[in-house]
Image 1: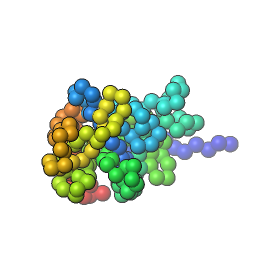
Image 2: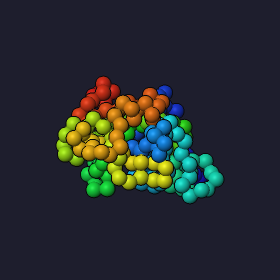
Image 3: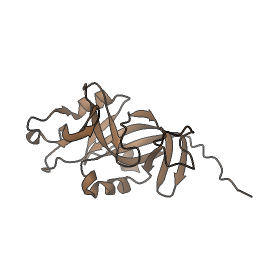
Image 4: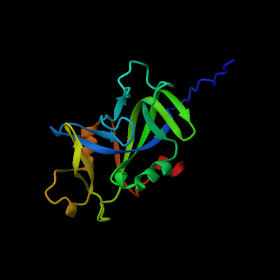
Length: 187
């Protein structure tokens, strides 16, 4: 006998937290995100559907595959991932978990997401972040961006946080580290 867990049908989409690198398209017309783990080779938009990174033709997420978007239930847990050297320039994303999802101990794996909020850390000089500047790396057709203050840009391609939110679209809110929204203060 294989007992099944009851299907969850929450009145509002669950919220998850993850880190990613903001990216800007080569033609400077679109903005998105590049994940830091499985599937981190392909940028995704603010509102996007997950695809199987192995090219298999099945519904995402599948219990027999690692595919799908991944997020943690804890904001602090996601922020803790930025302590490693390779993720220091990553931003914190608050996402609405949409569609089919699998819940596990620390978070979710899911089919569709909407990035609601992007929180940008400090400039490496510890100055106040006002821009996202070219990080000096990327993926084919995409520039990776990192937090910067006006003094640290030094001729690199850069755009304001508001311009990034406008290019990303879908109502993305961009915050600087230290800013707290009312929703975050309650939880």
